[in-house]
Length: 195
Image 1 (tube, rainbow, N blue to C red):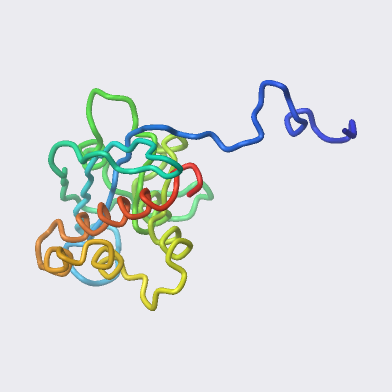
Image 2 (cartoon, rainbow, N blue to C red):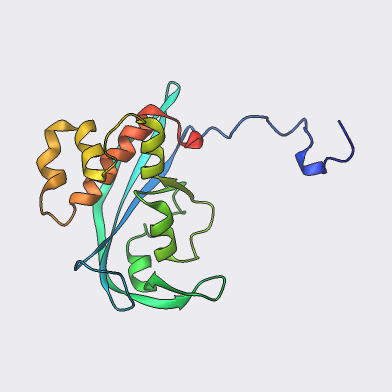
């Protein structure tokens, strides 16, 4: 191998050429829902929902083993702050942020959200990697390329047709249930390290 290649990119006897394979781990599904329609501005009220689950390897794919506990929710107003480039941005308040994360345990391996970039931006900087972010929307487009619609509730209804009323109903947890179902469907199709 050429000496012009930096050392960290050269093959190593102790470094595998494969992606890490997570045989099991925790996944936290997070969703942020505005309380009222309209653009998000400083002071807009949102509800942050989360639910934790565990996945394990099942053959070539992973499967979500179970959801633990109840869904957690926190209602808060968005706060204005500056992003890394000094531009104004919106974030969820620290109290709400901490209240929807599991307490007294290490961070989950994966944080899953329908639009992970949006959720990550609103949650702010404390959640760098790990955990690893799983964008449900992007992965649904990769796993189900022929679908006419990538609306969260439509995707969840296709995975669990018997629960359509729950996904399209007016319950405050409808979107979280749909995100959980889509997470389950994606983990059944592909290992998380591949997403």
